[in-house]
Image 1 (cartoon, rainbow, N blue to C red):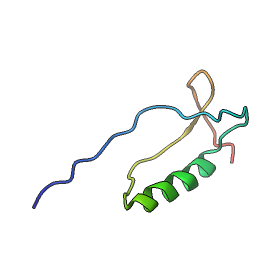
Image 2 (image 1 turned 180 degrees about the vertical axis):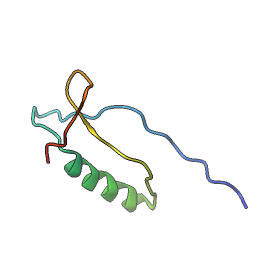
Image 3 (image 1 turned 135 degrees about the vertical axis):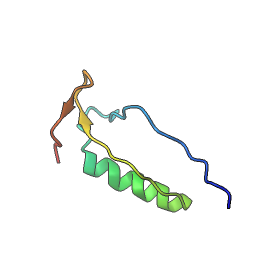
Image 4 (image 1 turned 30 degrees about the vertical axis):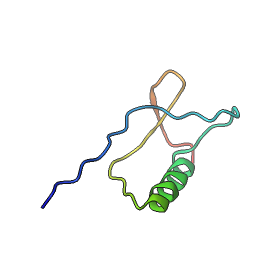
Length: 59
């Protein structure tokens, strides 16, 4: 059986409209996108501030 090949994500996403982007809001949209493509995601996310430091979820 062929082992699947995937993509690992590393990076940060900010909203371009100056509003805070909550992790729940992002994940909801990210999951919708993945499911629309027939893809799946395994992993976790956390929120960061503009300096890149981890912060408590805002939502």
